[in-house]
Image (cartoon, one colour):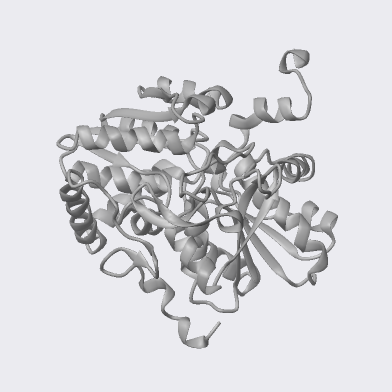
Length: 410
């Protein structure tokens, strides 16, 4: 990559919400005034010290930030190569990175006078985070969740309902994250006056991709400080799992202008990246198109119809990717790979057995790629992966995949 590209990454998107050819605002006329109002409110908040004071107070005293940077010593010894660090965002309140962003959006919603919050969710972690923050601030919460995901993420569905949220199972399509987002957008169009749509990933119409990225970048900002304290320098390689890509952008963004840092995003390879599309690897097996208000890489057929992706991980089961990731892929600043369900399950088990950390299936994909590359790297090479979610939500899915009957443990 040309050197003059560096020192420009952290300036995007442009005034039209574009990262190169990706992003933008492809929304109905009804939503455009609300989108513009949100953009204006966020631009004001970015330079408002009181906004960030409230965010920092809640991140510290409610979420539990900074999350630890953990040297995985036994895993490092087992792999026999690079040093492996984990950014422990699964230790946040609600068990994932999602709450970092939800807090920011709901504070903005309050400033805009919105009393009803809607959200989409796949693995349930964004839904749980949204329900949690709505409960704290006394706001009505409606979460759209694919019917298939409602079944495989039952613990998180119950958590959302305990927190007072209405969970709406979506039966259209395959009943996964894409379908939940479709129904949430329909709700928003119908209820623009009192409703705020809290999007959980770095996708959707501008300003959502940049706004969610900015809130999640607390992850990478902390890593810069923590790794410097631990090792006296930045990591050599950053690795994170990608569905829409918010945890990954949160880790990657503060390092984009540091050309010595390698960046790797890990997509869900499902049963393998093949012609049957039994995967959710949009960058590996897709092509550009428009979905959910932005132009990005998508899984689609020759006629441009969106295909149903597949992954054991509900949070990665999305046929697209955030537009900034699409841009970073096209210009070569970040590398994107895929990991299969089988490889993710192996990483899940290894994390449990060697480090006593039960990961979510989403970061298990990132860990699986760490397992692939670490043995061949020098011992002074430093890898930092984002352990973006804990795995209690996935134990039923993993047990089924491994052939165990949960009742047999009683």
